[in-house]
Image 1 (tube, rainbow, N blue to C red):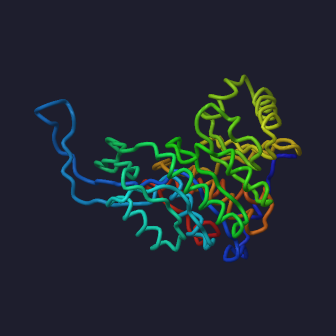
Image 2 (cartoon, helix red, strand yellow; image 1 turned 90 degrees about the vertical axis):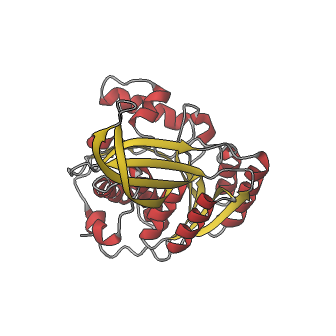
Image 3 (cartoon, rainbow, N blue to C red; image 1 turned 60 degrees about the horizontal axis):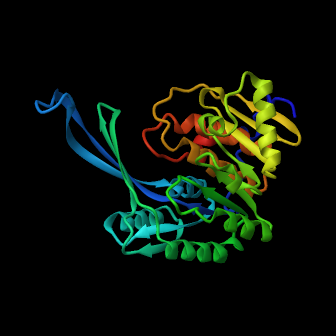
Length: 318
């Protein structure tokens, strides 16, 4: 597979996502933002004092993947775990607002995961995480919800943030493969054996390095990535490389797509956007090469936005 110089997919305004259907399973989160002014340092400690003037709430984690797909017009189903609390209610409300079919297991003993970011002078000053692992009963309900939704999906996305919802990922992969569905996994941690059998794996540089070690050059990278892919029975491995673009490894060889030069404002959620665009393109019947090229374009757009955000079709095909 030669390096691509074509950007046909990014220029094709005729892509119809309305019939594409994807299922996203993973760790649901609420992303909260407190925006304010910083004009002085606290007399109690050498930290800035932020006078909060406004706040915002967005779908995070696996819910952000679903949001990005729905923003393209894809029919999107989302499965995960929520608490019977105010943050869980906000996730439900935002999912409805964005046209996402949410099939969440609710646990009154579970606290919905929150990522709170404090922003001052358009810079992130602090992030506070609230999280806990879901109970076994909730994982069983999540598996059943997944089983019931797989038949209606063209592509299954496993969005793993390491919060526990995908503890039984092997069983989900088996269900999806039995149903003949494409499975895309956004991995976390160093145990990639749990992703064996997925169609497409999408680690970033740090995540892949954690598993295969540091590479000396591009040839060494290709050797390590291809060996990992074959050992896991994974059809394609897409390495996202930030300012270096993306590299796709498959039986056809290596395809490198350079990054599209843009000002980087915030990389939060960029990986979610990439996975969502990949899944949406494949569900719409497009080739993996077209999918990677458009996902690369989407990544270049979304890093220019503050916080977790989505890319619109108008932006993608401008």
